[in-house]
Every structure is written in structure tokens, then in C-alpha cells.
Length: 425
Image 1 (cartoon, rainbow, N blue to C red):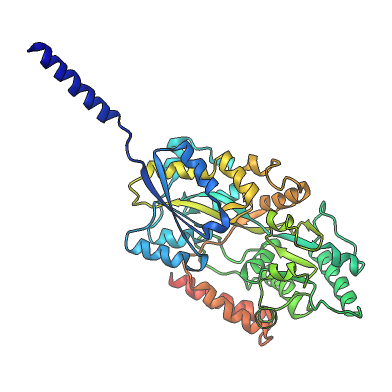
Image 2 (image 1 turned 180 degrees about the vertical axis):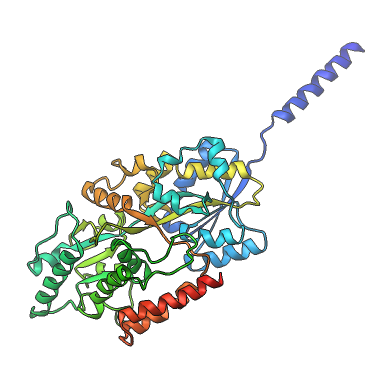
């Protein structure tokens, strides 16, 4: 009888141990991002799951046009994913809704080496001094030159080793414009194209040792009507309004109806200021030679950095797993993938050691130097706790494009309207 009981106990204990040691079902971690098939492939997240077999990622992708609408709905209905990816400039809006986790304590407790990332990228992920996400990738603007058109019109090509000042760049555009107009073919109407919007105007203000606002995070006062800001805005807008080197905002909309990068790709302009990465440089169907050089500087070098960030839902039930994914996204393995494939919306890795290695622009070391110099001279995008600002600014810029107001009048009008909005907040 004792033998039978002993055998029964051994079997029971063995079964209990087997149950205890049985493999648990993996944690389902929901991750939202935009345009999944465009920016990443299955290899990217498979590498994470290879290192974390206890975590299964559920990717929820949406087109960029609908991305924030869907995400905001999920936040309201408390069905938001565990990890959310978007532009760092959108952080303030989600922080105002208490929809993002302050990860400062996770960084500190884990000993995460935040200093290994570009400081301006990290700064872009802050709101009121706290970090709400990790920067994954970055974009900055540089000048892209169509060498075929430079050769055709016998224009000396600027060096990538020096930075033109405003006057030198204006003279370059003037020379190009004169030769185009005097050409019997006259196939090009403008010299210079850029991503239209307030960002390049603000960059010009920064380059003139001024600022569009009293501070770039949660500003309280617009400063576009100050002397240095007005000087910068006159330089910037006169490229289109006075000299006709570049199209106005309305000419883009009414005449070209394509993005500036598409127009440059189609050889409609010899000079493009924007963000084009490895896919463009390695495109075998481009049909023309390209050189990348630093953007012009005013009194100093300055531009905005566009940062893609990974954030955590404060209501997640899988905090540790979410944090592991954020760390993976900024790991050497992940950052090398971003450098090779331009993954997750950016072509510059946030991890400095990868960005400054041959992983980035492997066959274009000069381009790598130009781009990283621009990144080192960048500042975070302005983060204002109001989405009303564009609705105040854009109508005035449209009137300016139609030459219904002067540049100074437009900036003073914008200043008045913006300050009214900021004071109400």
C-alpha cells in the first residue's frame, strides 16, 4: 500500500512540475505604425521576436492620412495599442490627452544609455522636461543638385566641403535663372524648389540668429515681427515673390500639382532643398546625376530635425514587453536595418555609432558627412499646445503669395493672430 501511495505521489508531483514548467502562451503586444509595407518588411520585427520568443507582435498599420484619426479614436475608447509610433512633433498633442507614458523613470532604472542617441533627437521626444518616447529615425534637409542641368547651363557646381551663405546661394540662383531665361530651349521656369510650408520659413529665422517664438516648447509669444525675424522672412519669401527663383505656394498648387521631390525627380528644377535618402540616391531609373551639399546658412547654421518616435500607452498591461520593444528599436541591430532600408519613415538612425559608420550611405560617404553635419546643427521642431496655429498662419501666407500684403505686413498679421491663440491657451 505504501509503495502504491509513493508511486501516486511521484506521478502527481511530476505532473505538477510539468504543468509549472509548461511553456506559457506568448504575450500579445499591439504595435501601431503607418504604411507598414512601405517602411518595413517582416525581417525587421522577426529579429525582435527571435530574441523575445515570449512576445508576439501584432502590427496594426494604417495609411498616414488616416493614422492619427484612428489612433485618437482608440485613445478615446481606451483601445489604443501598447506601443505607438509617430512623428515626434505630435508628442505634445498626445501628452495633453494623457495618452503617452513618461518613460524617464524606465530609462533611469534600466540604465538605458540615452547619451548614445543624437541629443536633438532625444530633445524632440520631450514634453515639459520629461521623455515620452525614444527616437527611432530622423530626417533633415540638404541641397540636392541635378548635375546634368548644371552641366547643360554651364554653372559651376558648389563644393560639398563648404557651406554657402545666403548671399552666395542667391547669386547661384541668379546666375542659373539668367542662363535659363536666355536659353533658346527655356524648358525650366524656376531654379529652386523646396518643401513648402512654415518649417523652412522658421529655419531661415533661426539662421538669422532669431527665433519665431519665445521658446520652442509650449511657446507663449510669437516673435516674427522682430527685426531679425523680419529680415530673415524677407530673404526667404523674396526668392519667390521678388526674384522668381522658386514657385509661390499657390503656384505649386495651381501649376505643378506635384510634390517638390517629384518635381525634382522629373528634372523640373536643378536645385531641391529637402529630404531624400538612400532609395533616391540608388534609384537606377533616376536618369540624372546628383550631388548633395549643405543647405545655405545665414548668420549661423540651423535647421529643424524631423524625428520618428516610439511611445508607450500609459494604460498598457504589458509595460516590460513594451519597454523591451522600444529598446530593440534603438538597438544596434535595429538601427543598422534602418540605415540600410530607410525603415520607419526616416533615413538617419538615431544611434550615433551606427549613423557615423559605413552602415549609413555605405557607397556615399560625402553624402553621409553632409547629412550628419546638418543633423548636428539641427533643433527640435516647435511643440505648441495648439493645433490652431496653421489655421491662423496659412491664410496669411496665401494672401502673401498673391501679393495682397507685403512680407512685413504678413509677419505682423501672423504675429497678432498667433499671440491671440497662445494667450487663450
